[in-house]
Image (cartoon, rainbow, N blue to C red; front, side, top):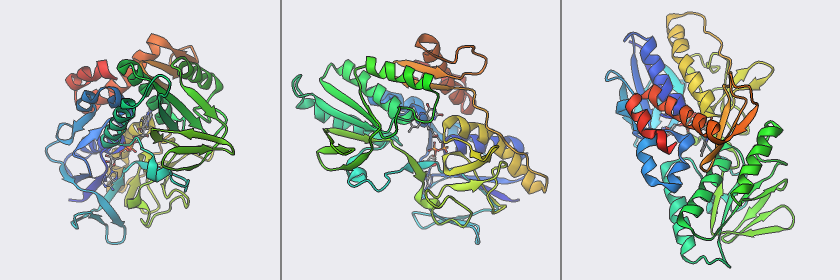
Length: 386
Ligand SMILES: Cc1cc2nc3c(=O)[nH]c(=O)nc-3n(C[C@H](O)[C@H](O)[C@H](O)COP(=O)(O)OP(=O)(O)OC[C@H]3O[C@@H](n4cnc5c(N)ncnc54)[C@H](O)[C@@H]3O)c2cc1C
């Protein structure tokens, strides 16, 4: 029986394992490898800043997702050898495959900015969020109303905006003096999106007392200060960087066509790379889309692709033609603390809206995902915290 290996347990990996299980009628072996023994609902990880108990709701054990027939190996992949069809793990073990789905997500890009990687937190894991919370706790110990703790978030995309909003809620819940700055190098927050959603997000962030700085790039960072543009210096107690993504180390040397700058893997609309036995979806992939575009690096795109990839791997094994996938966004919902902003939502006549409908939609998106991979009871338990 051919062995299909799925690498990664994010949206792409978790969804793909389930789509493979439903496609393949036990006619092949599935091996699932990830460095964590849980799936993390990453797009809600910022919620743990305010309430660490949310971890239990968004870290879903692998055993609750996969079928008993699927093998799971907890391991950190360090190398993928497409010639030998072998994955090497950090502990020295290796796993062979007949077909491989790479779904390892992305890591934070630091763009070579001096000091940034050394001093900034990222927001990619539970450990990252625990580290930020611990540093916030330490920072407020010395803070006074005349010398508030200084928090800087660099990058105002989905993760930066949502993290910033959550820190404002932490500030209010703890009732501590904290100044929060959101720094974005491009001219507007939530860059490359519609101006109506950008304006709505800015309004809500400003209502929470966030200082927003756009149009100047972070030039360098040292132990105490972020240097922005030519003459802005911001001292910080906590620095968080969410300014971009790049491919993971483990795919850097894999022998399939990839982007030279960020080494994310190029994949056709069928998710197949130029090695017919290697497929790639989620943030680690640049999946061709019509009009010379690629699918966006979002949870929404990852789970939609995951739904289809099982079918195409099964078709490849059976020697059938592969189907093409086109990403169709159903809309965006972005939290700003307790509040949220929604945009371009399918079947809703308003282009951009906030308040209770957007908050409810944001919850519904996360809970729908949790229900789809585990079941109703876990989804319902998560509802209040999303
Ligand atoms: C704070 C935050 C908020 C966000 N908000 C939104 C949002 O509102 N809407 C939205 O659509 N998107 C949002 N995103 C983006 C979204 O989370 C990502 O696009 C999505 O997680 C990509 O899914 P993925 O499965 O490709 O990768 P991931 O979810 O990152 O999963 C990658 C998996 O691979 C595993 N892995 C990585 N390297 C290795 C290795 N070497 N060996 C073994 N396993 C490995 C990881 O442990 C993980 O299980 C947000 C992201 C963040 C950080």
